[in-house]
Length: 155
Length: 147
Image 1 (cartoon, rainbow over the protein chains, first blue to last red):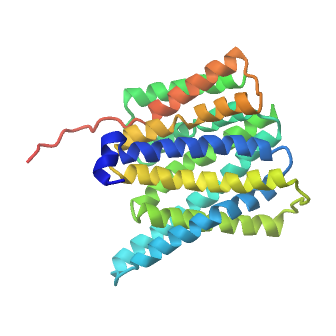
Image 2: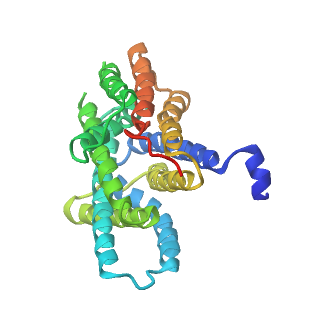
Image 3: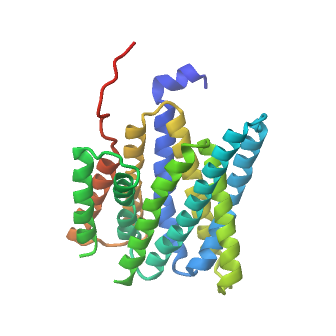
């Protein structure tokens, strides 16, 4: 299908966004099914096996572009970027294990997933304190609703 | 109710990644950031293998679901980057993506026959609403002159 033909139907960003909803929405389901027969450690190992083909693909696409004679300043910047990305992976991975363990301990997928999906509340609070970002009224409302949601989901 | 403690731990850790991810993508491309995110997953798994004593002897369905979990999570992250890189406004794309727990709730009720109390159902709706509101970026403080 041509780019023009596709844009007349659905914009590309919307297709990718809907694909994300389907992929992440289904992840909660398969995690709950797996939690009946595997511990969080083995799940983490198998989870990494699942992500490996994508790692190879992305490594290939990034490697294809190359670095093209970087300056020292750029190298330093890249080093810091890599450090933060790696830390994101470690924290995200331990978070995945905690998410999975919540299901192993009997949490329903239909409750655990909405609770953990409230993680932007922590991001917003940290950005407020450490990155000195400003919060809009809508975000303050979201923050208040997040606490209400946790109370209701835990009831 | 031990599960809520683990769920909140996941929420806090993933919340921190929102900041560390931004610190990373301010310096390197989202693709390279994602690549190092994946390498960290590999390192974490190596540490798990070295430190913990995993119990094997698993049913095939469990293995398939665990591996699928990694693939779905990784592909979801990749498609979200593609959505942001294909002209979608961040505030709209991230708000839309925040709807993903709704699908989990629907699938869990239909396929796993999970039952929610009215309070939990209200909580799920409020949680998704909160996640959408939190993902909306505030308007810039100053409007820059055009031209």
